[in-house]
Length: 220
Image (cartoon, rainbow, N blue to C red):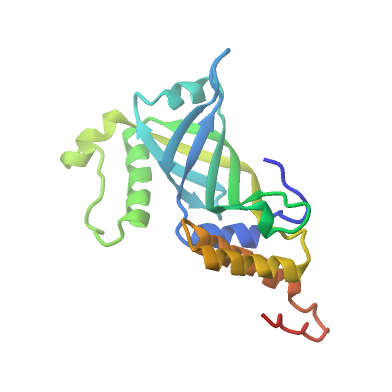
């Protein structure tokens, strides 16, 4: 993913963006010779403090074989995307895509023991299904425990995080602000979320530096 200086996301930014409820992504592992990457859409649990990501897959999932051959993986989360027509953006009228994307480059470890798999599943349940605290997985016990042989846990140790928030930050602040009006007028698909991100990035750019007076508000 190409990241320009003007659309790079910092840690506080991508952490806050993911914390809004973005916990579904595309996990990629390297395929064998002559093959493309192996891709799996999946929910995941991010533990920022430990620098790890937890998830589980069915035992026959081909991604597991790919991980055994090469544990280097990438998990990508992309949202708040929209197409911006060229006539919105002034001369020379070049269209573009707006989007936010966070990519985790990590080393994957397959968890095969029953207790380890149960621990991962219980942490996921606590995150995704907190309203049922009594529903937990115990190795060798109950209906869920009997399903453990058909699953594998994955623990991803994060090596690098790359975040991109592509919302025309290279344009003049007034022009960027006007693009938010365009999105509001169109109001299709994910335009509302894109507009929120565009205005947030605009606010970051126009916020006063410490010790300086605030800039005048945009009149529109």
